[in-house]
Length: 155
Image (cartoon, rainbow, N blue to C red):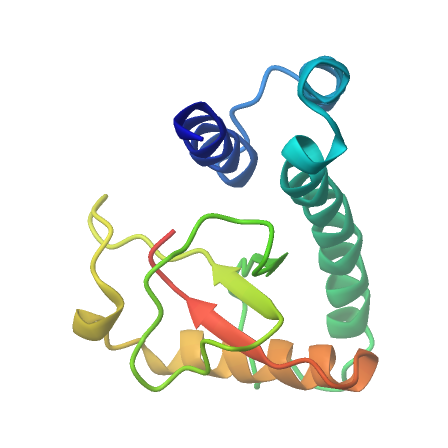
């Protein structure tokens, strides 16, 4: 369904860029769509909303994890933000050739160079950013089992 794909893409942008009027407004629209179109129509949309809520909690846990580390040498003083998404709910995004596309989770790391988003294949991450990715991966792997992160740096 064309409407469903367009709505899902637009909802993804609003949620990932935090430009939604409110979480309640998004939930209300999804609830109305559910009443008109059925639960199958809205299941991915509801999953996206849940992912964003869980990602916020995970970011808080990650900041707590960082505050208890002995040294900031691993990640420096970088304001590093990660949003972990469930692949089945979200639109398809370009993943680097080395990433495992069949994973159950995507991690979206903030990266913006001169105000432009670059394709993943052309981005060479600076060492501090690479360290941040490694610290988050260690944090994530310590809290989950049977899930692997695929990093998408261009969102």
